[in-house]
Length: 147
Image (cartoon, rainbow, N blue to C red; front, side, top):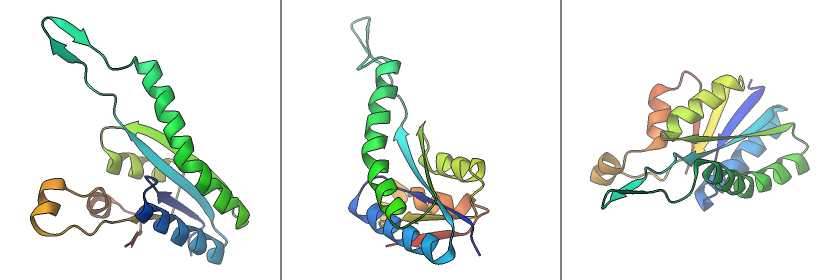
């Protein structure tokens, strides 16, 4: 069925549930698993009194993002490898996580995406948007949503 599955995670409790589901699915299918994490884009510098304030340099920001990604992706790697899966991880810095997820799935040649959804409804869903909803709307791959 699926030979390569991408699981998107942000390290949250709900994402960890999606990771567990993806590991079980990959194990049952004998598929390779790729974990993906998207860091937020570099923050815009602030302008005040004619002076530009940058919170950190871009180089420092990339380093901080890599540390955060490793903190989130390393436990997935340990779980996947202990389940006997072929595993890889991908990290990107992006202003649009849903686009980064789809780009990673395409680049890694994945055949399905597993991700969590907080299940927001009504006005909160309309105002906050949903990365999962955007992936579902734009993906050409099957998307398995875990709640």
